[in-house]
Length: 411
Ligand code: KDG
Ligand code: MG
Image (cartoon, rainbow, N blue to C red; front, side):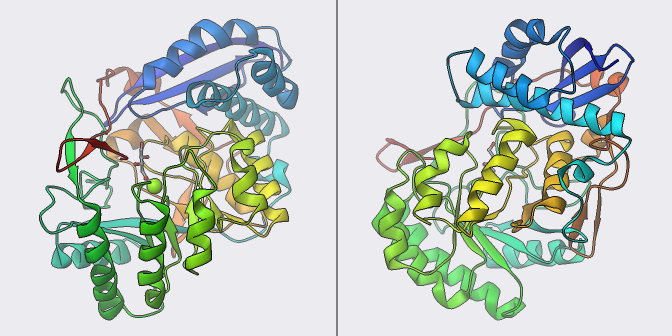
């Protein structure tokens, strides 16, 4: 029987916090879903435990679309990162179960494979040019064939968006706020003019050192006005970026009209969006080239597939968000989609720590710059509950950015 018997929220912190939902059917089939919302993890855990799990018991695990609509429309209150992460976890777990029942790797249920593997990009960053180039070399040695480059700005106290620079299994590059035994978020200082002056020179040095072929990406983390973004895009045109990410604050998609009119640098956006409806203007007006949502924050496989199909009609490709705060369960779900979707573009891949890999055992592999979900049935991820119990939750926050005058800026 595929009737849902129970569901449980697992909060664990092997190097950083993860929230996982495990659903079990009456015949003992289990499915996993990722519900990790960096810095606000427990809000989703409570939402699941108190408001969603009681609705799941007794439902047919096979009716994924109906369960999705039941949780989404039934709640009346729609969208938002907490709700959509909770629905995402249920959805992923149900796809995991369905694929296990079918005895197929999940991508087979999405239409089978469209490619041999998903082009992945790694993260390189450095406080100065030398450190950045070393970090790029480490990525190349690790097998990456596309690289995101972030560099320190002279006079700034940190490289925004990262705590560590080494993308290896021992010391993975980690989005800031991974975990900290501190009470308040770190504060970083931001200077837009210094950033706009410096980034083109840094990317030029990377092109000079590593050649014209290597696909390069850069993330501006929503920090620019449309005019500043247009200036940056234009100044980066000679260096042929794969994409420039999150140039303007996400709330106003029409801000990108001005950017689009002034630069041909490809644009990506969407890691903080959580619904296909959020993309309506962005996609129908072709304001972006890549949609960046994560399966974990955008309603799961069911909803991300809808987004990808919607985007495909307008020639927009995918570039799903894959930082270490998306758990191996969420990342596995991305890889099944990446393999199956025709309009796949690129997959972000930050390698999880060894402690994380001890808790989440995965079937996916990274070879010759490409990611593949593997042939294990389901999503291909198992959780070691004993190992998970050894890593208790620790509060952690993303940093906040302030300008030199002390006012809060976008992070
Ligand atoms: O939780 C926030 C991180 O996932 C984010 O800062 C990472 O911007 C990011 C990226 O592109 O991976
Ligand atoms: Mg980003």
